[in-house]
Image 1: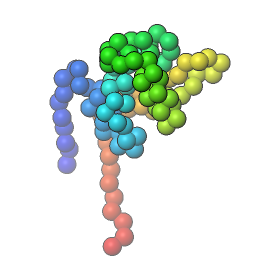
Image 2: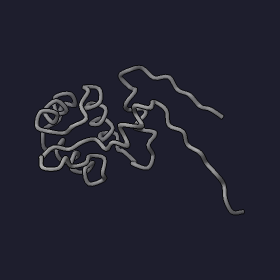
Image 3: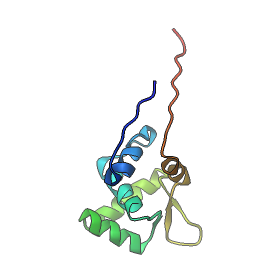
Length: 109
């Protein structure tokens, strides 16, 4: 069975990220990632934090706390010798693919 869903451009990133169940994103974490991707950003730095803050209309402390949470869960990875972070390349690859396939197998009784 193939399930398909068509979404508008403004919801594309949020919808595809929401299907990554193993990350268990909160709604606000999805908002942060979607805001970044909607603005063609894959690096978290001083400039991108400001864009995220303005897009989501939140103060810098809230944004920084959520970025730290995402970093602790390996959604954001440190760029060596900098203070910047990258979105995990696995997530970027899944988004660029535009399609995620789940296979379920039943074992046992």
